[in-house]
Amino acid sequence: MKVIVVGLGVQGNKRREHAGEDYVASVDPNSSEAEFNDIRDVNLDTYDAVLACVPDKPKIELLRYCVEHKKHVLVEKPLWVEKEKQIIELEKRALTNQVVCYTAYNHRFEPHFMKMRDLIKSGELGKIYSCRMFYGNGTAKLVRDSTWRDKGAGVLPDLGSHLLDTCRYWFNTDLSTFELTSAHRFENKAPDHVVISTVNQSLRIELEMTLCMWRNHFTCDILADNGTAHIESLCKWGPSTFTHRKRIFPSGRPTETQVTLVQPDPTWEAEYIHFKSLVESNAASNLSIDLSLQTQLRLLGERI
View 1 (cartoon, rainbow, N blue to C red):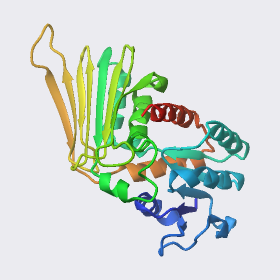
View 2 (cartoon, one colour; view 1 turned 90 degrees about the horizontal axis):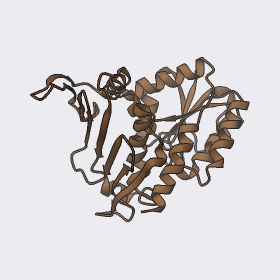
View 3 (cartoon, one colour; view 1 turned 120 degrees about the vertical axis):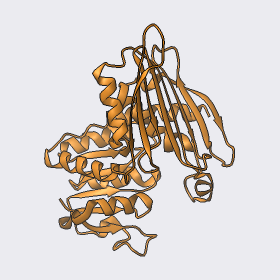
View 4 (tube, rainbow, N blue to C red; view 1 turned 135 degrees about the vertical axis):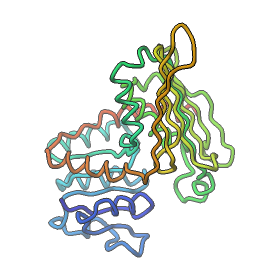
């Protein structure tokens, strides 16, 4: 498979690196490293797939171009559009042209995220009572100085899309059950600190996200009747620790197992391998999760 990268920002450079020998060329009108300014200038016979790392506004037109010309495409999250029907139409066209249209949520490939999913699926935790996730970085000023990022719902679609996708990945959560708890604009025009949570659900979920955490950090705490499970940090910020505590009845200090990883971020390479496998197996495009995320992010954003 031969690929081109559209958009040579931070994510585009990571995608280019992990594409390895599959990489053919890049497209970016604002980068001197790119071979092309416009994707329409790239010979269609030279590539099979596109790694789309562009801002939200031009995404849908780029994806339409790729799908119409029967090119597989990996697009950075979130798949943000003005109207939900645009996602439905894109999926239909991708299915007709038998190409993969895949939205990248690389945290699904975080080792401890996969470990947490396996633990939940095993049933060992028993009935799960609550899940709280915190995701914060210190990019408030970078976002504020950007020509396009300090707009709309701010941190909600940026980091919140990862957290909502994780809820689907772990629990298959109905995203329509989330409500806005709080939103603040501490430094930026758009919200830079947001909390959302489920309402009137047997599984309580609280998601907190911020651009004002000056040392990047992630935590997750899951409480259940047979014990608890916890994640502290991500591999990219390492060390990353997974802790599983088994409840002692009727009470007492739980037994504990803990795994700490100190390693480079493995998610970008793992996700690219996954994308290639979808292409090689002629997998059908499925944008239902994107549609659900788009709908709920838009509704939550309107309440800010």
